[in-house]
Image (cartoon, rainbow, N blue to C red):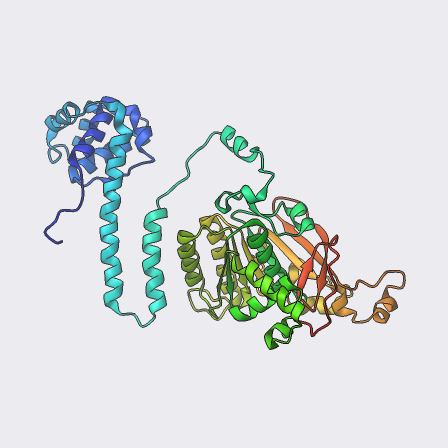
Length: 463
């Protein structure tokens, strides 16, 4: 391999340069395709750098101006003099195909970068770092950046944006391919009406005090998106094992208490419902990673790897407090700030909504009203700053265990048994407010208010 020359095409490079000498205005077609470093030949690289510099100074690009600027840099003779510039013009079939020539130069440049990347990855391997995961993360990042790092969006006319957002939404969700979903429905009517589903590239924080049901709501959203809308959901569970998650999902789907499923003490009719639930959930595109104490770079690499195999529609992380940054620091506030920024970048990179579960501080416990507010977000104000949407889960039933307790402070109000508030505390692109859902503690299941489920047999609470 050492004896082989890296891939290149001198003819394509010369045709690109010749096209610019014939029609200097054509550089606007190549600026977004190639850079000077994409040229294999050093003198060709110098000539294109000169053309780019003239363009940046709003000066004409032609044989004379390029020769003068090269002479000023004392590079004209090393480039072959004026005779070589004449040669470039003479070997160019037509300047109209400059984009085609530039794409050849760009493609072969990428192949050379791939060769260099393989050498860097080889060096990582030879270094034999004891942290294998870190080495794999570095290697994956090198290839990912090679594929995506140089892509820029460029300008598009406002008409294109208008046409995109005004496209008619398909009426039948079953006919929409997961990769074409413009947003991810949560399956809860009030939330979807309020937020229009989870939007691509948004960072959504779902927070609550312990035992409020925030993890249950995240799991219900994962189930609804995957089962009802064929979405591909990637779930990172840093707190619960994959088995515990599946038991919860089976309980919610079958309306059979998870404790019974674990002990295999269901009745015959309940066992049938569990088997039906297994069939439904087995077909759902939900991927679970229950690695504990995961670094943000590791999570990023795993998400990108899955995205390459199965286009992801939604990423769920449970929970933020157990995540680790890539650099060790004793300042947890700085660490959380780094993590939330990285999660927002991940949402933008993969163009999917990222739902992260977070805990709240104890501040709400000491207030007269226990309803959470943005200042209760634990560890860092960056959570509020980086999030596009902040949702709080709150249940009065948690603080008022009996109807008598409730009526002492709310004599004229009905006891909120089985009711949960979903508080939209921040909504970057819309209103804030409070929404109502029903919540069954025995099944850890949230439901729309209009739903009238069959009452399950009482069992121990899951939260």
